[in-house]
Length: 442
Ligand code: P5A
Image 1 (cartoon, rainbow, N blue to C red):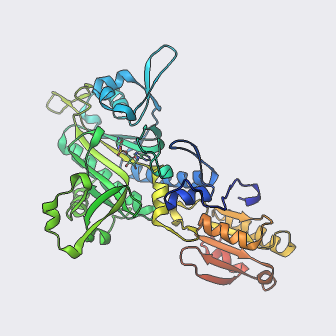
Image 2: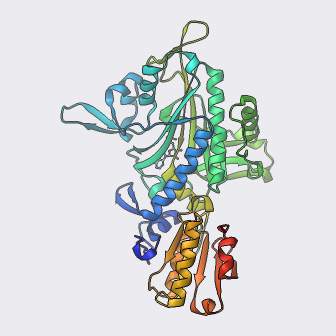
Image 3: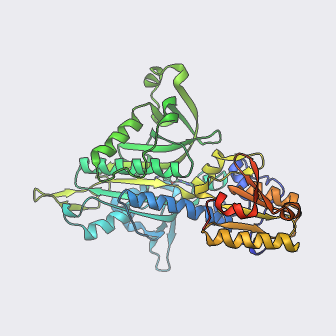
């Protein structure tokens, strides 16, 4: 992508309304535009990051055996009356009426809708286990929308729903999502700690929040320092092997970890003082087992191997992709801007032409741009006539992992400069060696 043809509305000044660093950097880097209280447009740069985040989520959901669907945002009040949640949900739910005065709502979550889909089709235990997920916008009329996309009113959610014959099956499904979440967040360069959590309006008796430790987090959390060194399962983990998955979950739930609501002072007191980590955290995922809470009132049953009908045992599993973008920035930035992990970077490489219009610089840049793009790299080519200082500041602000700097002096010597955004390390390379150095040689 040529910057001269891109839409990257960089802000020079720090926006006053932004209280935390990720909100400030997302506005300054031209990633988002606020449209109303807690509602944001994803501008081109933000949209690219969101797509990469969603892609990782999808790959790991699919790997764990979940199937993608897409449910509507607007739901009928009738459905929510069946579960008893229409009245219970309170003011966070946006209630609307259509032209026939039918009561509708903008979905804050989809337990009811997916249970309705399930009960319409699935009648036998032979069709289980089943896990359906989607990535769809939600609306919650939060009391305090703040911190940009961190706590929005309209936000994207990946929500998965599992259906099993009994508790044993449901527990195995919960564990698969647990392990899938460990992998998902690690792939985004994040250290997420699963913590015992309260179930709130979703309900149920088993729940974990996945927490990123960050000073700007909204939750107070408590955990053992051992979590910082635990290893995350690799991509060869066998989701078809219940005992392998259960062992991983045991490993990851043995050290103490709890959110404020579930904090147990007695258990905390047992941990040596030097091993305690009491910190602020950002909740990027939340998983629930709630058994028959929805299947019973909504009559979602299957025939078991015993020939009898059983209400299915369910769980639901959420991730906030829009919130994740902010969490990644909170975890990875410096004074000059964002530092994207490669897996979610909007582009892999920023190609900076220090003297656009100079025939030699243009030629070297055009050739590099073509070669790197052909090798499958996403390149943002700064071909504008801005001065070098401004270009460097923009490159650091938007935080692409690599910067390739092409200037007249280097070009005359057949060389260009490569800068690593994270380490700040610079190296001078012959032009011909660039593609190989960036893993893009033919
Ligand atoms: C689980 C999936 C649920 O709604 N039902 C379906 C369950 N869980 S949750 O914890 O309430 O939300 C899941 C994740 O969504 C993100 N999230 C938000 N992101 C941005 N702004 C918000 N206001 C917001 N609320 C929730 C979080 O990542 C949360 O873990």
